[in-house]
Image (cartoon, rainbow, N blue to C red; front, side):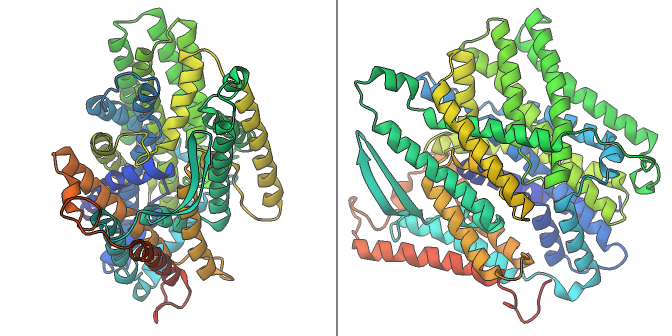
Length: 618
């Protein structure tokens, strides 16, 4: 097979990225698009193969396979942790991550999303109303690689150095030379302590380095609103029964859910419309699909749907009225949300596509069906969650593949030639992501401060209030709806002035701890300060940010594996107040922490600044 080399490279890349970024996504609640990163990796590592007549095809196949696994990462980490979080919140025995079931439903969802977008290629990719921003950015990178081989991105000072720095930073914290955070503000309200920390976490800065300063500001604003809200909740008099009933401890999750609902509704109204393409569908030979391949795509959808419905029928003991009704609801929601996911991705980009919002709507529908049949016990959550995981993976697969296929079309590569690469990347991700999620849960605990899983908390709160308690705290929801309306108004006003202020970023930020919002803002700030006046992100900037994310995530994954196998991480502590350890002065550890944060920021700044290298990459 002529595409074997880029295919193998892409599958290896997607295996590493989808596995390591599980932890990054669980911490941040955000999963950045990795297609540009995969192109840069292939271009930098294989310059000769990336140039000439076959260079464009090489990079396209590598991109399709290399980014596919991240669709599974997003689909799983957004939904699967809700089981562990909800059971822990209710004081029940927390079940472990069900690796086998997650692999099964991830494969099912991947097959649905993969097959559906492949079949609808002509409709999506010939629609002039869908600008496909990420696909056009990837096209520009590929054209630069083919036309200017001497301008390949510098991997050593960007990616490799970022990996090294992000691996050393948590190591310094582990041995006790530096702190993992510095306290900026602290206050005790009632029985709770509230504060804002300056995190020494390369992962947070790296994610910020991939976001625009406007998006980072909104994420930070959302996390700051959460801090204020938690402070107000703590100030409620413990003897005020009415106040506690109206605003329970988890009120900020409902505030975030209300804001998310408005943001999703805005996205639906703005982007979900009938697309009519007159005459152009059959004009582009790059979009033609062979009959045999089309039959394979149809089979993929049939098998994926059959796997999900078969699992539900097996669990419910046969074709009961509830199982049949739920199966119909899953089928309808999958196809609606997959269609919406593909459209939104091509409209605003896969990174900005409100995946969690589409699954939010799906969760509402499935919960209502379950309630109609009297299913409102914690054990029913174990039935709903795999269905949500499958649906979410299908939506994320549609997000990713629609962008990748558009890139191939723009680069004059037949889209059909990328189908197999997409499928192989999805399969790799479906296997590795559930395994890493299990390791992460066993080592750090899903929903804990170490792995906050913001999206999982959102879905856990929704299912708990709607399905289990059959009662919603409407006052926090009204507050969230108001905040969402303000965010949408800002989005609309700023959009008219050409400034992107996505309302979804504020809603997601409400689920994040303030220290994470601070870290993201710092990373975005260093990049923005370096890019002032250019408005263009350099290739090395993307690689540097990705290195900070991946290196830190790899360190925590390695540490998690060691913990899982019984390693005592306290044995690695050299400086501290334990037996046989030497206590360093506070000014030393605090100073090392500040220096470390500055070094990480300078790394982002240097790789983002135009003219940093004698030979420019753009």
